Length: 116
Image (cartoon, rainbow, N blue to C red):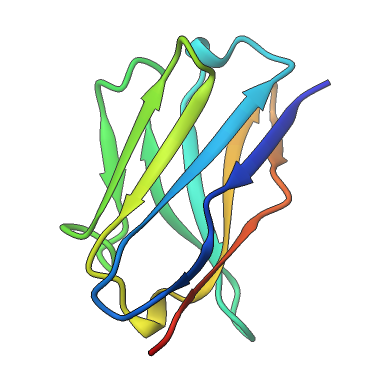
């Protein structure tokens, strides 16, 4: 079965950095685009970034462009989100997402808290 497992969240100071990972299994990872999304307290789900199956195309939400970098390692079935220059408004649960066969799959999420 499809599994997505995020890790790497935690507490960071404003201006700090964190690197999130999402380990995928149960499908041919290298054939599918992957996305990151987040949900801040009391708010809806916000798409953050996406990356094509071969990494040839990448996109970011305007709120994170220039600060976050998405990448993937198809040999390790893992997608990453490098988050730099973190702001308090980046505080959220971060999820990775795969859209397979007309169905969306989500991980359990990893909490990122940005606070001094």
